[in-house]
Length: 429
Image (cartoon, rainbow, N blue to C red):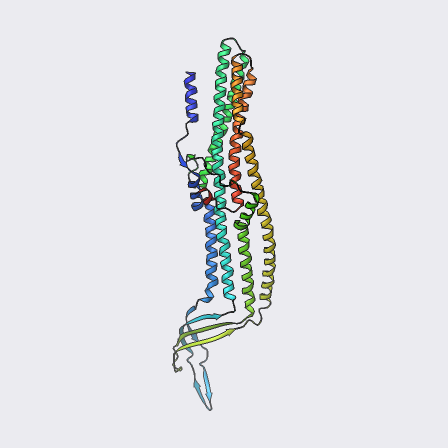
């Protein structure tokens, strides 16, 4: 009966729960198209796109339809010698349509359009950055889930090892070879191991819920991730990573677009000192019996010159130039920050690779050590403490191996992100 219970326990332990089979590529596709942060970034992008249309509007004609009724206290009249002649009714209706078109404003409107276009470019890059940030978050969560599954398996193997030791201790106790202390010690270590297993089981559930949250799925939906088969950073040097980052980093591209936008905005403000030429025309009808032609067409060509704006234009230019200088200094700061992030990510990757090398033979050595200690215990040469220490060493070696492996993959994704690489295109090929 005891053996049947143990068999059922380990069947439940090692058979994975049925759930959504999910690859990293499939998850990235969902996150980058439906993620909340991406949707927010797209909304901001639409705002910037509207700003471009707004800046372009002066080049399009403005059309006004109007109508009004006039009431005068006194009827308008003129004197012609001794005679007084009325020139208008004291109440009349006027309506019409007027169209105006800007002809030329010395680059004010075109510079405003360019400034808005660079602003839109910055928002588009921000959307790409939001996608990449969401992709990195998903990749880390995905690798965390894979790691928790491996750690859960390690914990299950540890439980299995302690179960086997307990059976050996019971057999040897029944034979009178060991004392009751060995059996009690086996019970305590087994209980402690099962608690660790439950802890890892909870960790796996929490990380699966994190995946579901990113995928906008019910939190308790079962997820079965598949292993990642790629190593996209193989062979890259720190200098090459810096070069790629300075060309593709969204932080640098955003500040560059902001600088260009500010430059064009200053040009637009400077053009306020120059004249603007316009053409206006329309049709008007006035219900007035004293007017010979109650309906009339008009065409006006004109020029507007800003003689004084109370210092507003010069103040805006001064503010714009100060902001531009600040942006250029900020760019230098961002370049250094990006290079620092790349270097840190690169060093993390190298350290993770070294950890993998260190742990390569540790598991095999720990397994051999456990085999020998079990034989020693069964032959009455070794002690229970030595056997239990061997199980602990094997668990630590397996844990370190998986932590090093997934630590390397997380560091790899972090390096690619810091370089500005599109993670969906890298991992989705």
